Image 1: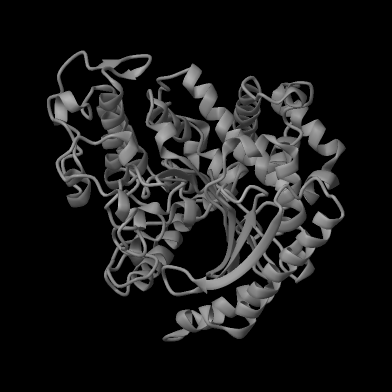
Image 2 (image 1 turned 180 degrees about the horizontal axis):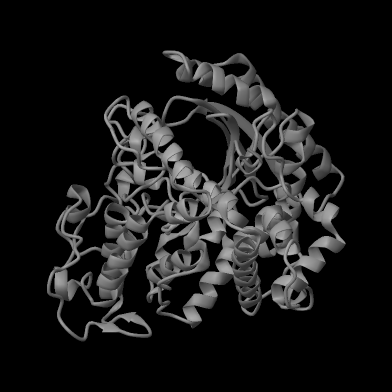
Length: 536
């Protein structure tokens, strides 16, 4: 696993807002005295608190000692490297990096063994030192200015049909990135966000199950394919019988791996790349929006599905140079880089380590559930499509043609500005369209959408609970650490219209009974006076 929880202050947010608007300001931001001073203060405070609690015999202090060393990252931005060492010096130290990102301070923690997240001592470690320390120096998590992304081992997802099934599952549940685990924003745009985007994902999934990524169709893949980004298909006329309808690719371990690897690389370039966030800003000289990076602005990201010898997607440094394979050897799982991952970007800030760990494990348990229930079928339509693919029709029908025309005029100006004059089109950002469509929907239709979202999420949580190995989890309410994730305006929409006492209505009652307690688990939208889009 890899973790990236973030924390901000009003000052860090406003500093980025102001400095990024002037030439050279972005570079100056990463050298700013306040940002670097705060970064150092947090790292030193973690060390001080850890040593004190270690002496006191705290169970959360599993490591014998900790030290901090300042140094540049691959972009020459200073960061704090905290190394927690075991009593056995031969064991690899656990490293926590604390660095800067636009608007935010970010922990980068990888790799972390999955088993640790089931150990209460490690959860307590995260809470005591990573979540409790930043607020002592004025930093807090927010919804708008930072996330809590995490990544899972790519090697795990390249077995059976798990990667394809997880993508299909996300297509069926756009609510996860828009209403539950995060909020509608271009940084982690839903796979189903637009008609064209959803269709691209459907096409690549259909090709997968037709066997178009199997080595029997493409030929044996090698590192050369990876270095030159070619030959990943899909094949035009795949042979019959290379896919099992339940278990995915047929053949030996290498054939299964190569099928799923080719599929993952194709998803990146043929589906993630369709209407990703910030697509208007793509430019070769941009730090964050280079053409070969722009597709990462999605709820799921496969940009780091790479083998040793490829170039890092951001720094362009050679990955794992000591492990570079022969150019024309058959691709094997062992050639994957140490950081090869399937990233879940649809995560907003988390107010506690427990909040973060439960969000992460929900994704892990969902993957385990999908392993037992493979070959997920993509649903042709859901009620949420009224806010997505059919958003313009919804606005036109319920708010009128003039409201839609106003959105198009604003979109034309926005696209031109964001693209430095390169894009002349009135295409509306899907997140803008979602809120316009939501406001336009009558109460009864809003309640129906809310019911679909809540019901689907409850089902997800309950199914995940069936494969949760923790004994305590099975004896408790599975929604207890997830109920607060559902956007409050969905509860309002449900409450506004009478309905049957179904799963959604029962959840509404549970929310209402402890509303203030659940709201406290949600981070603020912004540390500044930024207005949430649902209040505009």
